[in-house]
Image (cartoon, rainbow, N blue to C red; front, side):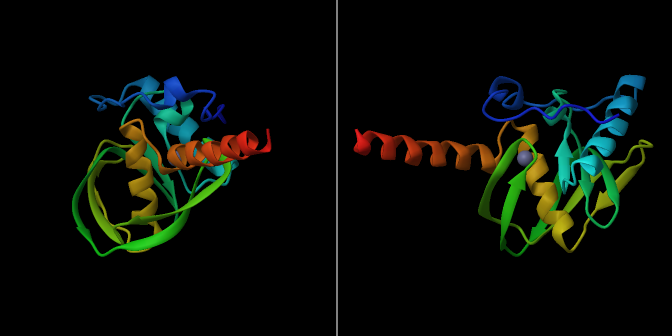
Length: 160
Ligand SMILES: [Zn+2]
């Protein structure tokens, strides 16, 4: 089911929560995974984390070169650096160039609770790093939104 995506800054308190590890594939978690897939596809997003649907679990879905479900993902190795324009479904119409590892190797569980290594050489690695930030309650676009607001407020001040 396509779910409501929580937005910054309106839903700041929800989005800034830290997410917890998934210990078991319960019916609630299975439903959440289906909803994450439906929502990211419907919104044409490159990726989504569970907290964006208001659920503080370490689950994300990458929509690049197919759909990849990562549960409890941990970066084990990284290589190189690249800067790319980044956006977020929780911060519509804001983009910012962000420098990240060019490639990462991630240990995770998939939606069938199998151990997997996710190591996409292309944008998948880049998107995954964005999604992992959400588990810590942060996002490059939250910071960019705040920065743009400050500029906007400063401009209003000088006009007065
Ligand atoms: Zn995001």
